[in-house]
Length: 294
Length: 194
Image (cartoon, rainbow over all chains, first blue to last red; front, side, top):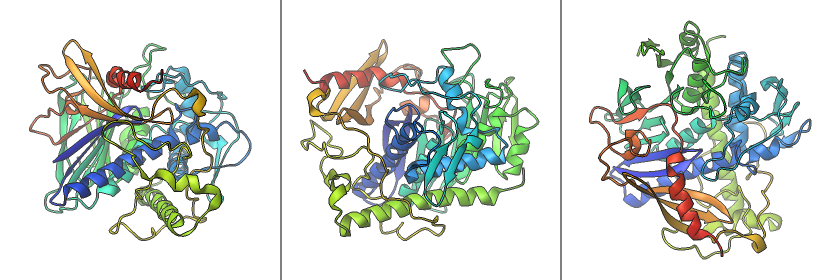
């Protein structure tokens, strides 16, 4: 098993490949897989003052041409915002910044961008033909819930010819391989309170599993605030401590797990059923709710 | 909310397809279409994108921030245009280039530097690559396997490459890179000019 680990998007990206193919071939593919993370981060980060996203958001009311590494995840985020009627909303970035989620990792620079409190995804317009972005109000777009998933998917595609591989970006992962007989993976879901234990195990195969949870990133600016903020109430929801979703693509699993986390106890399983996906949700009292035939 | 699983799958695979189409377009444009105005964006990349040791030699100052790297995402097996290509093929590279710092106030020497971060129980080693005053790559090169406890640097077990035999891997809420900041700062101090 070949294994390499790098930092992107303020988390640890760990890639493992097992193959009979040459070491050189696998190493080159792993390098390309990592470079997908770099390209998505350069395009989609709201923390880098010179990311494509931040530069594009400086202009209000005019169409700005954007490249595919930004356009595609943004388009997906807007589709999901529409479908969930704003439960999921990429315009939440300004609120996140105000909650103290404004620090660029490794360098510690603080992001401070203008944002209109009333801005929602409906103030974001994408033109699919001209490949442009138009903002109707000043806002900070947060693609945290889709961009990492998208990078995982691009990385997984680079590795898809190998017999067995895994791309794990800080707990969101795609596990797969070309070997049809032997690519089932046993994935543990982290225990919300006991850091080095798992609370549940599930088997996936050529699929992604992404977990949104309240136990890792806590706001330094306000009590009881973690890194997932409800775009409608501007508060951190507490119906769940962790929501894990399995999907054929990490971008989908990532986005749906974030949306589910924002929902109430009776709503979240329904969301997953409507998306025809499966998942494991954990309540604050550590009760486990399985959805979609886990 | 209508049932829409198919739609999400199509959206995801189309998004990946667009990236591959654009990389394919970019690498072909690079190979066959000389474009005098934009040579710096695609041409110069070649050398030393990840030299394991010591400073990379090339000055590379012409390369724009987001240029597609020489290693195209396409390989023989993944080739071919995607099924769901969107109208208007996306342009080869990101439209706007970030300003490059002038050499006069450059803060770091280009190259790859090793840094270590430690706490009372051990250390972590990273290899940081700097290009044009930007961190372009941070690789964890050593996790210091001599830890007695697993939560040494506030990282979960799977990061420390110690895993239980029951599971192949672990999914959980995204943890941050704070534990690596000392090591990165150490590497940067070696890259610093003057």
